[in-house]
Image (tube, rainbow, N blue to C red; front, side, top):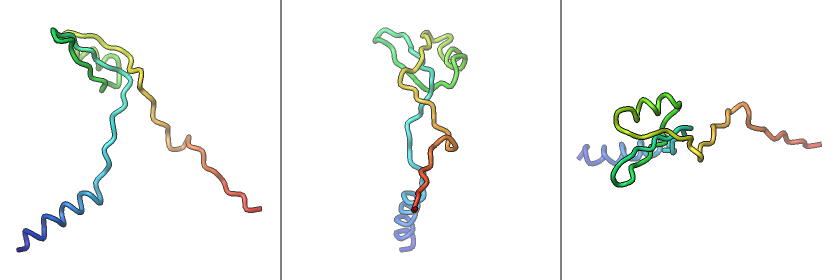
Length: 84
């Protein structure tokens, strides 16, 4: 009986306190070559990291044209309310 009550409580806690999933945003993509056109992985922080990944398996690195750097929290504008 206790187990049947424990599982919904764990599920509820996971949903309530879990972090939300976000897509990763990195500046470099590896384009892998292959017989079927290859594939792409845009999960690299640097060009060197990308090149290490494709070395030996075939492919090349390109700039991720959808990359948008994160905005630092201190750079966000705060609106000041003027009650006068």
